[in-house]
Amino acid sequence: GGLLPSRLIAYFCGVCGIPPDTKAHSITREQRAALVRTLKALRFQVKQKRPIEEAVITRGGVSLKQIDPSTMQSRICPGLYFAGEMIDVDALTGGYNLQIAFSTGYLAGISAE
Image (cartoon, rainbow, N blue to C red; front, side, top):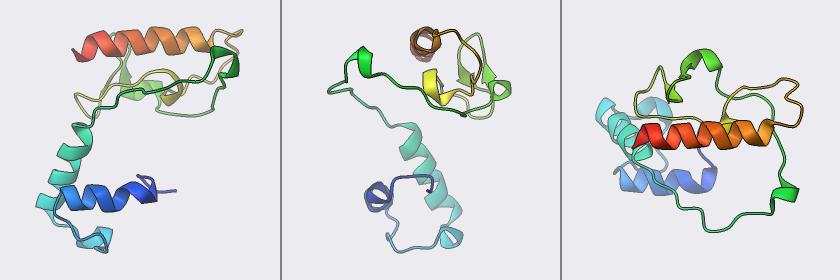
């Protein structure tokens, strides 16, 4: 359980010019900056989804104290937005966890434009 899935480490190291066997404590400031730029620039396209009837929830996530609620932007890393299951909203929501996901996703999306 690290920062990235193990299968992606070699890919990102290659993109940033870092030999994949480099130990984390040996990465230079410039290499670390390249990794941060690369990870922050990631864009994903959803290719397929499961039916809403199969939706599940998780527990934990990014603390609400670290998120600007008016935009869902990180207070620590500008340009990084959170939504849905990434957020630590662990409460008796009365079944509205999907609404929280939809609403925060929408807000994060329009705020990131």
